[in-house]
Image (cartoon, rainbow, N blue to C red; front, top):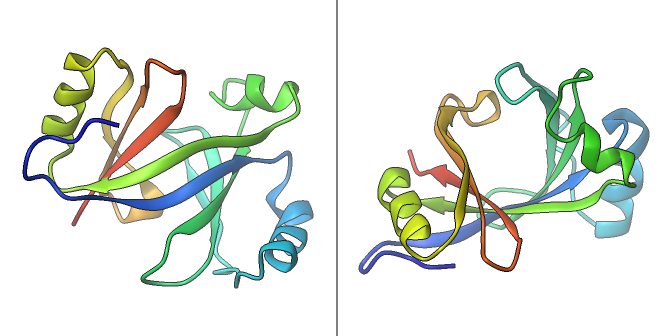
Length: 139
């Protein structure tokens, strides 16, 4: 991942696609030894439902469930689901995405507000090695 000079980034969460949050969350919480935040977010812009495991101050684990036939994770789930993306929190999402484009990454989605993050913007890109990365704009 390319960071612009002087820009702070840190791992915020790792996303995992599942068929059902309700059917999966207990097993993930137990296996990872992480508390479940017991809140499920319905994001109509992303067309997914998400929930988080883990606590403040440490990287979290996100479960992502498709919400509808046109969900962008539906195809990924049809191939078994699993590890989907990593998310970094950044100071300036627009600058970071420009740096990624200049480094040869493919921008998948320009920044949009995210329900799960109180309207903070998220943006997506694929690295040259085909890793899907999400940027979350720091509040």
